Length: 249
Ligand code: ADE
Image (tube, rainbow, N blue to C red):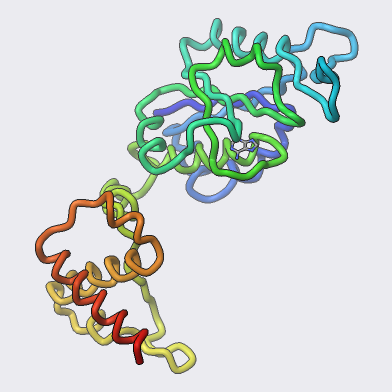
């Protein structure tokens, strides 16, 4: 079981992603627990102000430290000791191994920034900062959903079969092989014969080769990180030769 708590100014944004498909089922089964808190509920003033103009001038608004820190502390005092994560494009890039690492915690508390940023002094109250990529979102909400989705897949009981997480892309640092389902012929395009052959050794070989080929063509950078067997290296040489020939023709 893993618990995700979220501090946000827009709790509604979390409704539908959590109410569909695998995440919904995991929540229903109690394998993951998600609670969403409105940062505005941790303000102390009459007008419930959550942002203000930046010291030193400039455009836009900055989220005030007070309500966020109050929220973090209140959730900590009533809920044990969550790992506190600030979502920001300035954070550590999120990837497969980060998802796996975060899935080892039993309680994560995400803080969603909005507007031009959060008061710098909030940083003293978070354990780590996470970015989901080199682009600026309107706020951390969608980023949190991405992280919860990816982390949950490593939590036992969330997916049907545990092995599917281990087998897939990036675990062994190759892109996935192509998949097909019925019909055998779709608009003139046939399913590769080998997949219908029933020859499981051949199928495994074909899939490995296709995974190598796809990775070589689309993400050659990944091939540098992965441990390839002698057989893989031989296949890769074959693939490179084929690609060269295709290019030269
Ligand atoms: N908030 C805004 N942009 C973000 C990003 N790329 N990653 C995480 N949080 C964000």
